[in-house]
Amino acid sequence: MTLCAPPTSASDSFAEAGLLRTEFTTERSVFDWYVVNDNVMGGRSPGTFRIEQGGLDFVGNTNTRWRGRQVSYRGDFDTQDGVWNTVDIPFSRFVPQFQGIRLGGPALDPGQITGMSLMIEDKLDGPFELSLASVRAYPTQAPFALEHYRWKNRILVVSARSRDDVKLAELQTELASTPEEFADRDMVLVTLLNYGTSMVGDRELTAAEAAATRDAVGIQTGSFALRLIGKDGSVKLATESPTPIKEIYALIDTMPMRKREHPDR
Image (cartoon, rainbow, N blue to C red; front, top):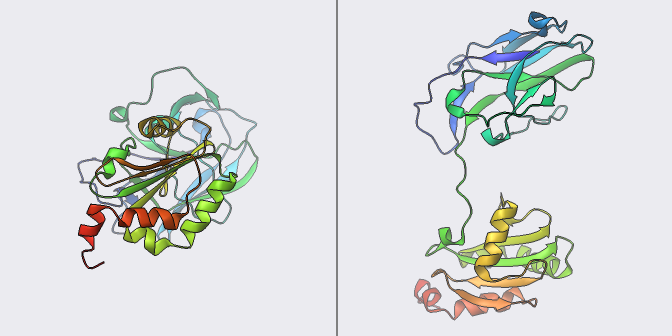
């Protein structure tokens, strides 16, 4: 069964928090939500919704013994019982499906979207409840590049096979004990992993972004390595051996730009 909302104009400007599409308050609810149960396609799953306490609750009873017929672009996401989650679903994750089977077809064209729906399809009979607080459009991040930090930050790049690497763990422990010193030097940490998720700060990097970063600073895949990149974009330290973070801070403090930042030191 499906909970639907008609489209609205996307002429609003983006705010830092994203483009708000709907909230479930008297003042901000801009969609006229309605339920399309699968009985319109021969199914027998009743459902309804209610808006209260600043949220939308989609409730009903799923009956998988009757099948409907609907082809649409869908982006799946998981839920947790009793827990509010923020779910980001880029348009690239939407694929055409029919009765849970992925179909061949063109990628979703956002310009052709005429509505949106919520669908419960866990193939489990029985009651359900799905709560929704808001829907926002958000901009796609530009591909990661070290160049974005030039003249703003010093970058510490560390490469390892996985998060279980002993050398990586030792460095992370040192960094955790010196957060103020790290921030005072305008530093950004880039962690490149062969097995696991590569990160820059709190942002996950794709495999392609991690590979491009390794190439940019001359790091071989699968090896432990450190690179310190100055604000001018040049490599100030290149080593394949662990280096105590205190030594890295000391090296930064000898740099002319750092001295100009703190002439009293």
